[in-house]
Length: 336
Image (cartoon, rainbow, N blue to C red; front, side):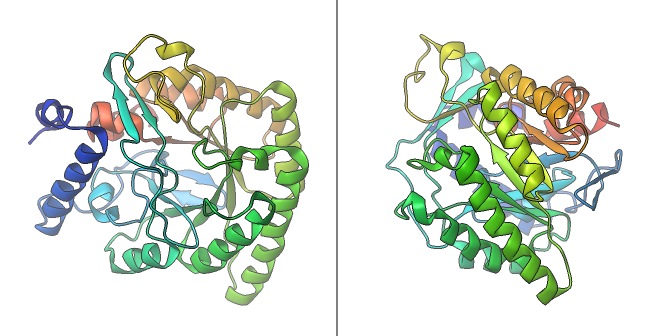
């Protein structure tokens, strides 16, 4: 069934129920080979982080936390998929309800809280998948790991996923894990990234392959914080920055139903701020580090806007909820 016809039915359900049902239907179609082969749409090839991307449009982390649906998602034609956020140990996340749509604003609020089945379950799913395209794995810390010990969790995940990922993303910007965003502060960020880079060097020597590291940041950063983050990313040998995660701001949805729900706001309301962060980072970095743009992409023109602001690749998530798989084709075409 075409997504425009299916969407009204899904939107009658609560957000998480609709999410689960959509994936069941997608998995069924993929298993019966009713979807197209899991290959990227033809488009403009892009070199980024030393990787050859078949097109510049990717899936953002958060939609497929456990890499349980990569074959179905790959059939949309993405140039790359990013799965996770994954943590060392399984955890249930925050209590339901924790996912809310705001259709009037093409927006979503989530406070999922890194709900996932743990890194070992994710790797088992990756091993079973037919998908052989570019895979990024997004890593984080368990909710009950003290923030001063956060590096232990990131290092544990890095060691496990290293040989299975084309690149690894360090998520320090979710607003739904207590104190996580404190890791964006300059000293804490430098210490974490230095530990990861040191471990990455050892793993590269062991496996004969250097896996790129990207860092995902929040849109809710002031100019001085962006200055400091840009400097740390370069100094600690990171390979890319993903801008941005969800926002805690609510001015763009004030007065709308669910607007006051705690969590991260994504979709159309974060687009301008995320693009501004991309533009600011591009000036600060001066080409020393590529930028992967995410936040509010609901059309091909929005994807082009991110590239024009200085991004090399783009990622979509909330746009898929509102536009469906056709958004991927439209974005690839706009960037070709």
